[in-house]
Image (cartoon, rainbow, N blue to C red; front, side, top):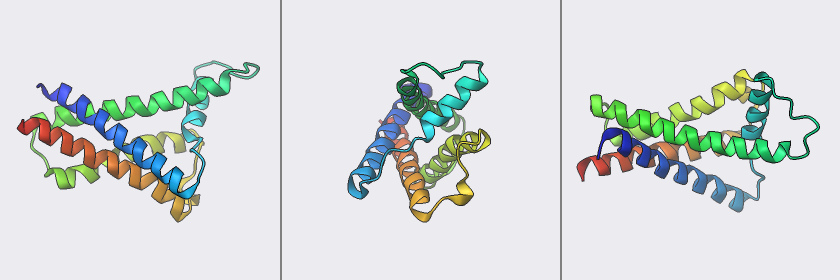
Length: 152
């Protein structure tokens, strides 16, 4: 299997892990889903010159676009990880996983912050945990799956 395909497969597994941890947290704590992905989608649409106001289906489209952006981020990060690991061994998966998780978390939080959707400096400890833990699950799972397919 080629590095790009292994990376995509690993990124898909990581995305599933991130979603499972997120939904598990929502189930256990009874917290609502984050609206940040759909608000990012709304801001991006407006910057692209699209005006969703007046369209009763706009919230549904924003929610779907936010979810798709998350899937694309997970697959894209997995693909980049696969290509990078093929060129250099880098850190062991036990360290690479948390680093990858932190990079993907920054890849979603930095644009959201730049768009004015969120301000991480105001987040509570619980909000940080709700962001950090799923992204660590993504990184660890992606690195482990990539490493397992590399050895196979």
